[in-house]
Image 1 (tube, rainbow, N blue to C red):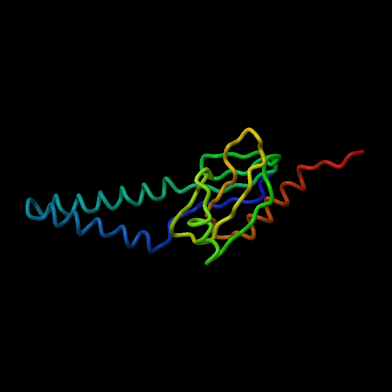
Image 2: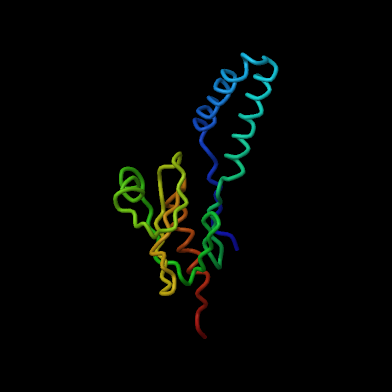
Length: 153
């Protein structure tokens, strides 16, 4: 059962700022050939957009695990998640960051969720990942843990 799913799409300003690849390629190729300059500008921008969209990670909470990017954490090893928004999110991504943490951070998404890893065999102390809906992610992890616990009879 799926409790939460979010794809960390780039914000609109990321696409606008990466559009600067077009005038840069025009500056390089226009003196050689105008057609090549225009085509290379369009192709480079298209490739940049495709790369941004294709590499957007997914945050997923199911009844058995939490997925952040390429990493999967079984719920039995997931601690109590905490959500952070500005300015605390900035501190979690910066000065309070443990170098051993698993990170799925996108600069265009400010809020983060910190999920402790409670596996003695795992050197990763916690996951820190970006999300646009940190409270919903924390709630989804709690709900998934509750659904995983079966009452004893």
